[in-house]
Amino acid sequence: MSTTTAGDVAVHRGAPEGNPLLAATDVFAGYLPGVDILNGCNLVVHPGELVGIIGPNGAGKSTLLKALFGLVRIREGSVTLKDEDITNHRADSLVRRGVGFVPQTNNVFPSLSIEENLQMGLYQAPKRFEERFAFIVDLFPTLGDRRKQRAGSLSGGERQMVAMARALMMDPSVLLLDEPSAGLSPVRQDETFIRTRKINKAGVSVVIVEQNARRALQICDRAYVLDQGRNAYSGPGRELMNDPKVIELYLGTLAADVEAAASAAPTAEPEA
Ligand SMILES: Nc1ncnc2c1ncn2[C@@H]1O[C@H](COP(=O)(O)OP(=O)(O)O)[C@@H](O)[C@H]1O
Ligand SMILES: [Mg+2]
Image 1 (tube, helix red, strand yellow):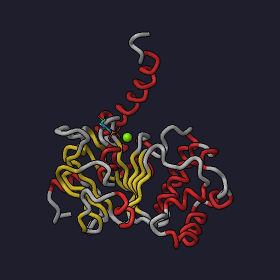
Image 2 (image 1 turned 90 degrees about the vertical axis):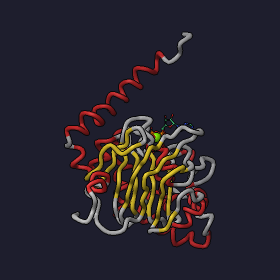
Image 3 (image 1 turned 30 degrees about the vertical axis):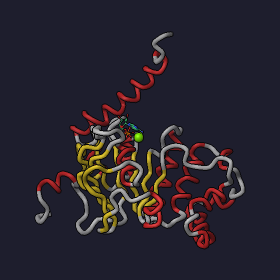
Image 4 (image 1 turned 180 degrees about the horizontal axis):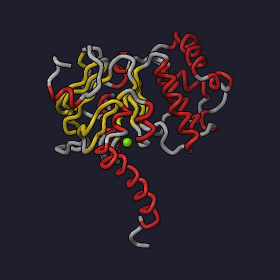
């Protein structure tokens, strides 16, 4: 690491050497004029890596994924894919170039069958359906057995599997997942993490945003902690999990967020 500057080491601690597959550099982005949600975000993903993004609610994790996928305008900074600039490229062109994105919610067409959902994922290259469907069924055999079933009749965990499979139809080199375990029971969450690992082992680089920070850190090669639209910490997942500062500031905070959200719910109506 002697050729890397001290700043780079701190920002991407533990990253392999060589050219990244996907890189975001000093990204500023937001929804409203003059209000930046991302305040200089940095992220690199090397070929084959499983990279986690954790951090408190509202830190900008989803915004970062959307900015990478051309859904939130980047005002400053850049995103590259295999050394080509893709800053503010449109989502459909990014899909063609090998970026897959699974949003947190509304990520399947409930009235369509599993098979039709997968066809939608491949609308830009319909001729490849049989080949890609075979890859998906190899990875997730249930989807083959139940290909005619309506996606709306599936459980939350199964729907997440369909959403991931749909994004995989275009054979992406990197898959962006926004909180795939959200709202699932612990057993279903585990299945989601196992599926994510399986996708990664099949050769797809993965960026996973997770509210379940501990679990994410267990499965990730490396992770970034985002706070207020900036990288607060980064490093190998297991190192971050045992880092006293990360535990105190973020793993603790996340637990507190969940408790706060749970206790805030019944008192949310001021007029009552
Ligand atoms: N569509 C939107 N319009 C305006 N502000 C938004 C929108 N989506 C998110 N935000 C704001 O951006 C900030 C970061 O949100 P988000 O990226 O969803 O955080 P996280 O995913 O880390 O919980 C929050 O303050 C949120 O209120
Ligand atoms: Mg989010």
